[in-house]
Image (tube, rainbow, N blue to C red; front, side, top):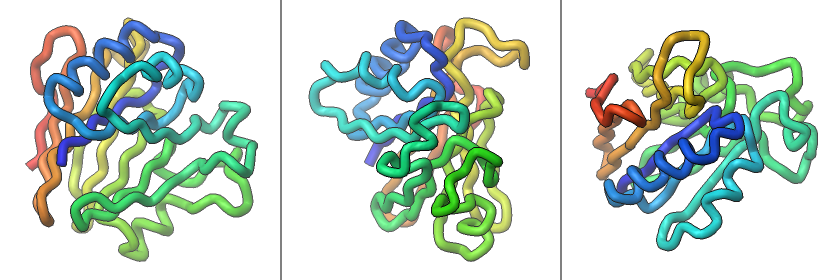
Length: 175
């Protein structure tokens, strides 16, 4: 199964569309948007054959709406994955929100997908895979180009690539 992951589009709709197009060309079945900005995903409503899952960013008004989950646990090909905007709990969390650090420490998931920092990265810590796809802004003060992640999951095998949106080169790869 191939899954695309994007985060922190911040109104940069053309970059979001470009990332979604590149991911669709890679054969993804699903695109995950990890917040900032929740409504940006509406720009992908015409994508055929690709499911979209999203969670809001911590400063979004949607984050305070109990009927919209701020964090989700999904299972793909026997890999349990936490979808969250932040790597840890946040002051804007609702009382019922899952705390990423607790879910991770209890071994409830195999992978955590998060955004918020705008810093692309993939790392394994204590047997858990942490993936931040970066951001989709034209430029960012932290110096990273716009990026997205491509996950390939088969059985218990996971491959992750983080790709520069404009250059197309892989910035990070796991394993």
